[in-house]
Length: 347
Image (tube, rainbow, N blue to C red; front, side, top):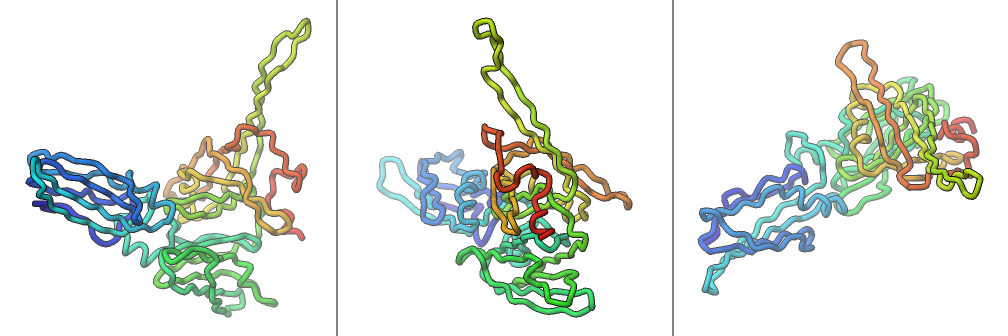
């Protein structure tokens, strides 16, 4: 007989799935774990003093759930007796949402009240930038735009991506502009979820612009407004060929150093998502149109700040091209490495 001691039900984040434990009278249990009907685990487990525990389930299922963001998990336990055809079966089911962050709340509560982002405050943006939000579910999304003359207007937002499990919406500020009015701020609402944006009227040039996978497995954009520098270095292997010394192998490493610019505290907490991301790419704007370019790797970052009243958080980091060949030439931006928005801003 199978006795479930610690079970699962409802929704969980992949990083906080509790352990499952049960006891059996037989000599072993065949345990099968499926994600969306795809078998990912099939093993015989043997009891200790009649008890069996399945631990660290999140590490097992995370890579599978990340593909779809939300999946159904089913654990089937079949007890077997030695020298007998007698067997008992038990099933445990739960919905798993991909997440690499621990929020100290249930997955169901977070999903109902928050977008898929660790940004829990105001986001600063500017005209000409692209912005996106993602959320579990298919709730209708509405934007309320506020203008400098005190007026406001609502806009219905249509999904631009997703499926029957999650939704992606475009929250770029330019779509809320009205002739004769100056957009000052806007708020996005989908169900109980809200996200507030404020406009930076200086419209600073941005370099680099990065798109990265966050802790929920969806993409977000970071616009760096500080100074960017590039520092190529070369490692040369040389030898005498005949009577002449020649460089027969030159390895170039092009290291970029970026500065996020001044951030509010909500965005300062959020930018750490870039530094922990395993997928980061450069975004270039050609005549106002974005193009997702080369993959990069963050090689060094400094995200230290304090709670003093006069502190203005700003972070610096270094990155390199992920590919082996760093001799990268952008034919559409000849000689221009420091500014990814110039073409759009000054058209």
